[in-house]
Amino acid sequence: MAVHLEHPIAPIGVIHTCFKEKFGIPRQPNLADKAPGMLEFFPEFARPEAVRGLEQFSHIWLIFIFHKALKKDGKWSAMVRPPRLGGNKKVGVFASRSPFRPNPVGMSCVRLEEIDFTAKGPVLHLTGVDILDQTPVLDIKPYLPYSDRLDTAQDGFAPAPENRMCRISFSKTAAAQIRKREKQIPDLPAIITQVLENDPRPAYSNARFSRIKEDARKAGRDKDRVYGIRLFDFDLKWQAQGNKIQVLCLDPAPD
Image (cartoon, one colour):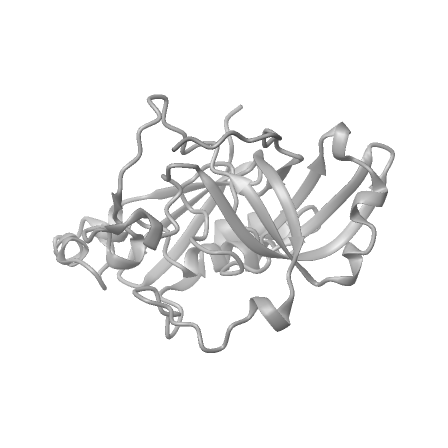
């Protein structure tokens, strides 16, 4: 039975983040708690009174659209392959946080650092984001610890990891490049470390879930592969061997 919406849903603004492409984005909010974001409201919603009182909350929920997960044919799959299951086991789409959904709506709980009241309206400065740059935001709600935190909740097939997977090191070239950028990008070493600690490689290549990565490592191929993640205005180049990742350099991103 079709339901008619009296008030069509429209984005209230857009979020700007350091994540310029889907690869490398943390799979949940606050896994990279230094990762910054900035939410700007569209003119219709850029009213100071609309955020009055929000500064009293440390964290907020963002409801947003997975705008890069939209399928032109409108089709969706009832079963998906969550990264936490290695990418080779299926569960129902409604038992997952996959972006490929009947309605591509996501939600993230992020830290509200500051509200900047500009000539164009309020701007929210955030950290702990796990959202692609230029993502449309549908709504904002304050996080309420007394009701939103449920200590007896079960975490199904996605329990909290016992510890960080990867150990991160920096080449001399990367370390020098980072030192030059730290004033422009605060917490840059921590942001890079947090993004890579969570191992952004495809889940099917993860040694915890599959023999593919182990076979490749034994053959000496894994250590020679150079990965790249688009962060801020640079391409982060790195290599992995087992659970060790070395940052090679920060290449300027092409226009």
